[in-house]
Image 1: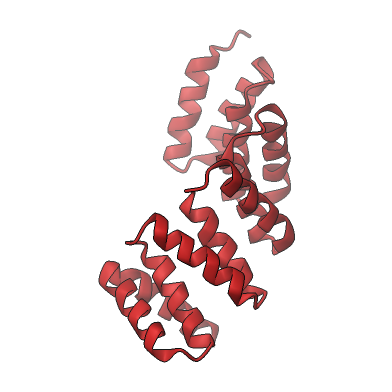
Image 2: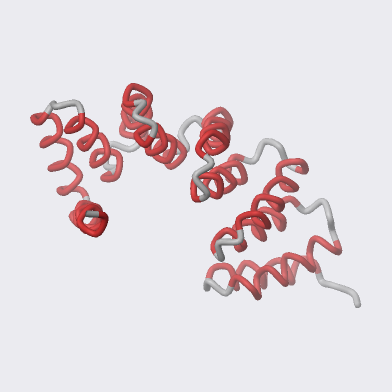
Length: 186
């Protein structure tokens, strides 16, 4: 059976965009069978698996994509998220750091790495990453919110209030979602 690789890839993207991950995986699998060196198909397949919570398959596909295209920040970011979701924080930090090395303005890599540092009680590094995130996008509600919480943890209530208020002004839903999450955890 002859596969129209480009058409199959585009169909996979459409399925991915609509959250039809099984259909997208089938398309990207066909693409990788016809063209094993298509890093983007491996990356997209990895992303689909990650969305399904199938992290081992996701990481395997991201590893293949990285072997084929070692300078793609998005692939490292996606793999870092898989590690993060599995509480493999050391590998997640390595991947987010690689993302930042490849693309110094990759906002979400700073945010995710900061969250890991917060979880490890490494507040100094978390502040550095959150400050960098804010310098990249001074309207990033998540960065202000998490920096506000960090200020609260170290007892600086004035700065905490300023940052959380700023986060709320930028995106009231972000603050509300985080508060709801905190209440659920109690």
